[in-house]
Length: 241
Length: 112
Image (cartoon, rainbow over all chains, first blue to last red):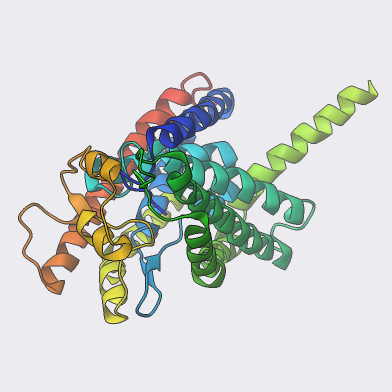
């Protein structure tokens, strides 16, 4: 899902930078208010996990390959804003050092994987898991569903960015300048592989790690939702007063 | 053992296993991800190389392109080894940069 340089025209990659920067700013502002320096090692760990899990390419026999991102998992453990920043850091290092994802596409790739994975994944998880016991089945099932759906949303949005290029950017004679695949090719190709394989891998990774924390360190799972519940309660109390 | 060190061992295990990310796709005869073809491959897939793509594709020369070492010889063994080494380098850079950013972002709230 790492869009390389040359697939998106300036209109699209410019727009994607413009869309992603506010999320980076909001995430930084949020973390600036809530993050304690002693939590820095956890964010470093989250970013490292996202980096390394993306190296595990899962093949479709005789076809393409893909991988999990860990974005929803990190959002569940560390909160959506920490997830946006840490997955973005992984993606930026991948682009700069390893040429995985283009420099011009950093905005798009961070939006598609980090912002969507963090926010959509976290939102769905919270919707399903809120109020459930930390060690309950509902928690890891919620994580799996959230990871599955958010990765598929990421893939769909990426496919749309590919697919609109032939319409947006072409030579005077109508030849595509950048990604030459129309929506009718890009969307089914990316949607199917993520619906049937990579989404399931993302769901499994997420569920397995949540199960690990449920057994060994349940407190990690309390953090992000509990703080939300506390703020919710505080707000309600304020309204009563 | 400290909780966070235990989790780093998990990352270490993933790094050790990372060559599987090269080997398994190769065993199943599968290629790279959809939409991530290089200029040579796009010609095969699409039949031509779009002009704008030709211009932008080489915008950046990554020092360890495709998770390989400089002057790496081809072949599964050296590719797996390069992948493993670049996994270590990548994890170190990613964790290091994130740590610095988090320290800066968290400075207001200190050690509370």
